[in-house]
Length: 156
Image 1 (spheres, helix red, strand yellow):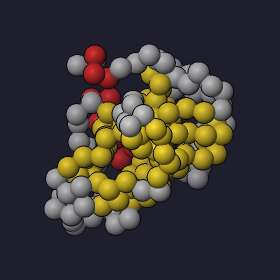
Image 2 (image 1 turned 120 degrees about the vertical axis):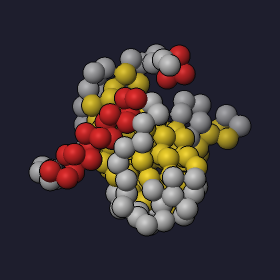
Image 3 (image 1 turned 90 degrees about the horizontal axis):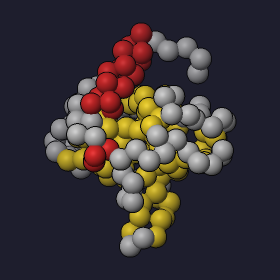
Image 4 (image 1 turned 180 degrees about the vertical axis):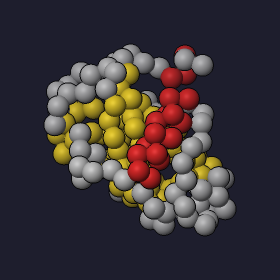
């Protein structure tokens, strides 16, 4: 995966702007039922050399639910999805993205775990992800690496 098409690059750029804006909704999966976009994406600079967390919001403005089934990136050997319930973290195989709703990955809740990092991301870097869905086409996301103490709720 060394080449990117012009369409893919344009989509990645639009999603990067949505991720930086916190509430933007750029990019669409192209599915007639689900209308997916990604915003508020970020990775706190990891304290570990081989593991990191990632957060983002997937918005579905469509009439049909979808399901996030996998996340991949060249930055990590594996990315797993986790939910936190009552303080206990559990790996899950997929997450529903409700029609006219959101799937939120945030600190203390649902989150992505980047395992077997190929190099330790530093503040200011950008990590490229591919989100795969049960019904919609994949979305490419540019996830900025923020400070280890970054808190999006204090940045509005």
